[in-house]
Length: 344
Image (tube, rainbow, N blue to C red; front, top):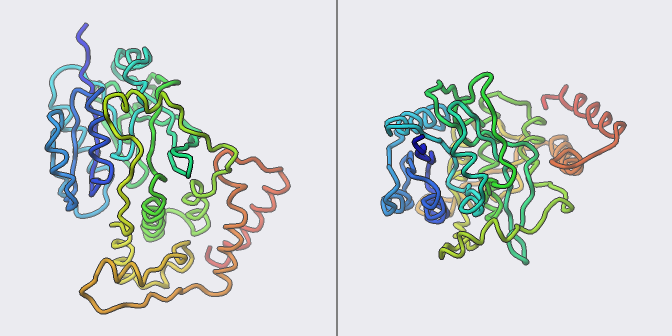
């Protein structure tokens, strides 16, 4: 039986802070790496071109569009002849280093066509002792043993690969996906602010729902945060790959996007979102040093501030791995329903 080609599918937009590390690691287990670049200006394209396994394609979309970029990546992968295992990762996601030695990888690569490949997502952060992590509760479909199935993506938080109805599922138990999301906490919070504003404009969720969904990672109980196991990194470190240092920009592309939304829609449109503990005046000055200073006043009313205070105080009870008594949960539901009457 012919061994399938392992194809890594990755969208990129200004990911130079992590891209070299990602490509060095992915090159050790993937036969092909397809990068769909959406107009990067930070050197990401030059980094990608240095890796022989990379095929660089242009994502010409001017807007955030998950289905379009997923279709682009999938179509390019299917130009590769023969059987294929598709692994869809963002540039800040890396398979744990035991992928290089654990027999589980051979089981994954040898799964029959049409199999959905699910991995546990572990979110990495850092403190004075080094890298730490917490496990996302669900196992997500990061991979697919391709059988030509159609893929229908959603506008946001979409499955990245086909998951046909009735598909067989293989659950990886030892190999995981490390998400370097909070290693640069400022970068992560910048991205969260943009997501919150974008979803608010799309009317996908009410303000309270947006808060509860996007603030979960920021209020994870310390009791579930653990040091990163050495075998998750060691195989890469042994091959000379730096797995810990981070290039921190301090100001990020999502800040620019949110400022553009403020200009287009007015700040009052976003007054119920938790984006006002950030210095937007300073961000504007850093992003547009040649322009006159601008002032972005906090548009929240006293009631809005009170709601945000209450949401912040209670979020740790409603996040990953948290458990609360039924009466307390019922109390939170009742208060949120009451607040929703006032537009929340």
